[in-house]
Length: 111
Length: 113
Image: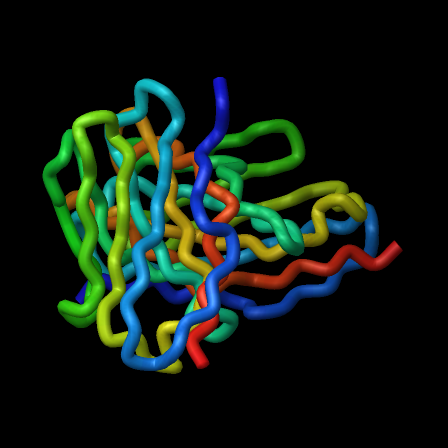
């Protein structure tokens, strides 16, 4: 079936350190992998996305890597700051206008 | 551009009742997706509409239905409400669909008692 597993469910890192969140997906036909950030009480917002023809994408302190063979993709946040504290969701589109989300990672940045 | 809006923002209903939620997408966006968000399950896909056509639906019972109007506004309806339907219902609009950036609305918080 169409499934996205996300780990860890909670993550605490010291300010300035890096954070990594990993997701695996079930369908090799998946071709679009976005990451959304949801701050407390707010709506999810896209922070970065990657398509299946690309292995890595960076945007300032945020990067996403995709391993199609292993069917997993990861979010990397470097030089973390307090405003990075939020819940992060990975997702995968299974090629049929259906976006399946992971269960989320609550990231806490410790000052 | 105005963002995605959802009405109402909060709703309290009793088991067995039905409810209709509304979503107005960003001007020019023809795709509207609906999601159910609960603490334990994260964001679960309900359905996606593009130009009044439902292109896909998630694994929810038939009590959950939706539609999209010619102006791209969308509604979702839940009939015979159950306690487990209590959740935040989010809609998201996009110019292309679920393979592009989706802009989420603030959500409708539904409580079923």
